[in-house]
Image 1 (cartoon, rainbow, N blue to C red):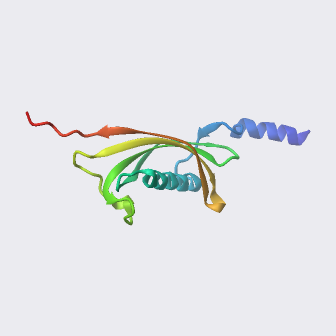
Image 2: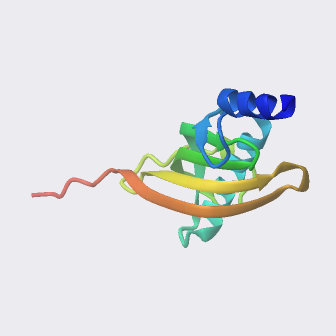
Length: 134
């Protein structure tokens, strides 16, 4: 009977499985999941320029499942996507400058370095248009 009470208290304190709750965006498993989705985004794009991580808007996780909801913003850089050290590349400042905001749901098995993207959506958040000469 005591184990049932302990389990019930645990669920009340920690939340139930399959329920996203806010988590620390600096946690190791969440951080490597962010790196994975940025890499996945770049690989999936036909654009030769790399996008780099700019900001996490929302960081949530499901207890006991290793599933994360990652809402982040990325910016288009001056570097090519297979260049080294994309994190230190400058953002594009010309008329093609873009930012995207993406939401990913990722299942992460940290100790195996295995990731499964369960769902993703991305939308362009900023486009700088050139003024047309009149």
